[in-house]
Image (tube, rainbow, N blue to C red; front, top):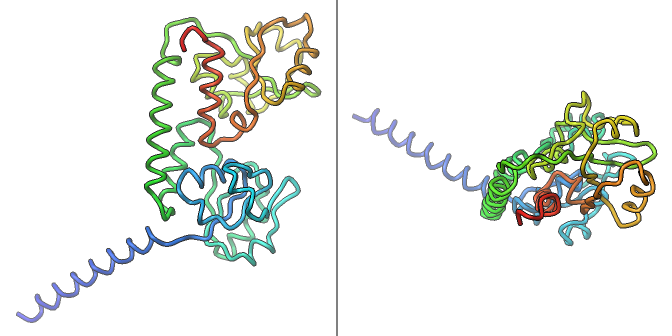
Length: 277
């Protein structure tokens, strides 16, 4: 009878060890570096704010993020400084961060998670994924619940309405003139509000377009982001060629694929279809 008893004790010990390890993982405070402003916002939404030890340039929300050291910008990633900080998790921006320095860091055994959400659902999924590394997963749960509720309300009020969709030109800059295609957070926001992006069928996510291409598609609304001076520049660019309403959104809300993308959606929906407020 000794063998079964010893086996039982071994199994019990293994179960206790697994339980202990899972508890330690949940409570471990990681050393996290974010390499994009959007990833920084995702980290805070997931309860990882206290775990962040460095961020990218322009990581300015929430306000606490501005106090953290910056280890990347448009010129590149400071690999040496990141190594010195000894992170155990890096949040990278796929398509936005240069790959070579990330490969160098990965070769040193530093775990890297890549994010590049192209719709609000994938923003929510990113927060859910980061909850696995968070010392405060309840914050992630609250963030996810709030985002899902807001998304549901917008879908019910705008995306699922029977009203004719307004054709929308998402304008990025003037010289040169760019827009955005289907597989982007900006297109998803417009679609969520019941709008129809005139360049949604573009073969590339950020097409350079011409005046003639825009005019031929006969948009009803221009959606842009930035400050009032940029709105004036858009008005001057089109003058009498395209005398249609311009909706100006907060630049960070509209262009960062983070939780505040829902703020951009709320603002756009209310301006695009004011009767549905």
